[in-house]
Image (tube, rainbow, N blue to C red; front, side, top):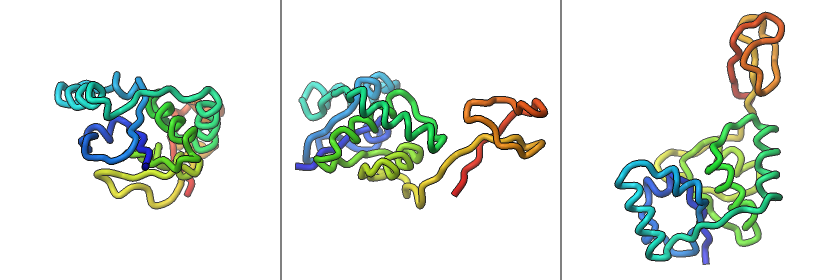
Amino acid sequence: MTVYVLDTSAFLHVTPTTLRGELLTAKEVIEEAKSLELQTKVETALVQGVVKVVSPSSSALRKVKQEMKRTGDRLSVADIKVLAIALERKEENPVLLTDDYAMQNLAERLGVRYRALRTPGIKKTLKWIRWCPACKKEVKANAKECPVCGTKTCRRALG
């Protein structure tokens, strides 16, 4: 049986009852559902028992966060937990359903299978850095201003 791990975009683009397999998500994904249509879709899947809400282990969360630091990707709490759930179930070869490129980038680096739904998906993995557009200095990942000249920093991908 295929294990699918759903992020918010999966609920937007797929009707969970059409998927055959075990469907998992995080509580934070449910909380991200803002529109009435999405809330209804999520609630129906939960009430019917089609989707199970699970929590990842602290170990899996730690691994995802460590890889995020290495790549410079930015994820919401919901996305981190969804990716950690998929990572934790790696022995079952789960499929992460997401259109989020940052999640796909991290999934690729962590060895987690993923499937894009409405986008073409990533072509290659990237690492993101922060740098100063004025003096061209690479700065710490969380630096908003250049420590050398005070210019607002930017983010750029290294291929």
